[in-house]
Image (cartoon, rainbow, N blue to C red; front, side, top):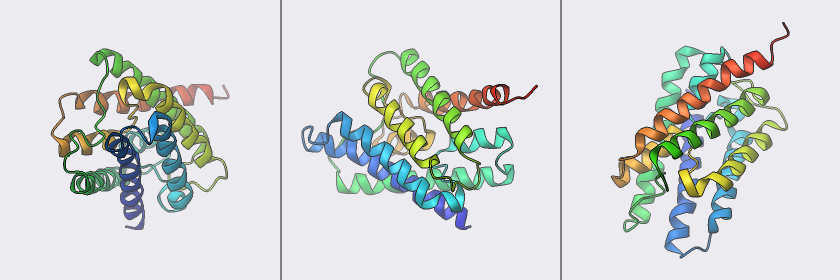
Amino acid sequence: MRKYVAEFIGTFALVFCGTGSIIINEESKGAVTHVGIAVTFGLIVMSMIYTLGNVSGAHLNPAVSMAFALAGKFSVKDLLPYIISQVAGAFLASVILKYLFPANEFLGTTLPAGSDAQSFILEFLLSFFLMLVIVNVATGSKEQGMFAGLAIGSVVLLEAMFAGPICGASMNPARSLAPAIISGHSEHLWIYLTATVSGAALAIPTWKYLSSTQ
């Protein structure tokens, strides 16, 4: 149960701070800036990995949990409770942000700036690269390494920095699901549920091939 509570808290913090930075940037007419939003996402991911990694692995992301299970680095019986905990944390964060900023229309929802295909491909590749880094620096159930949080947080920051203005740089189904449902803007949600999971999943056979000694 401690693992599930840790995933709930970590994903709550990710969505509250990350999408909160988007909302506050809109409410303050750009005071946070795009760079500030990217840095916020990277720092909260890094902070939660260092805070909760030794408890649950600090996945904070259903696509990451699914990919770890696919890699055999994470117990399949824990998969559904992890996903439920992550989604619940994300929803609570979006509900609180809706209460704090009732006039905000999108609540940090990830939306394509161009075509659906453009954002799907971007999200697929972003999730692939993120998971490829994660699976190489993390163990799946507990993260205690000195550099895991720094490496993963840096990739999140990097990808949000360059791709955020086009596709939203979600890389995380829970992060996209909660604000989309709470704000009522779920018209493009399928992109962020399918591209993130499939991109993260593809990273696993790639990692296995690259790390094979044969």
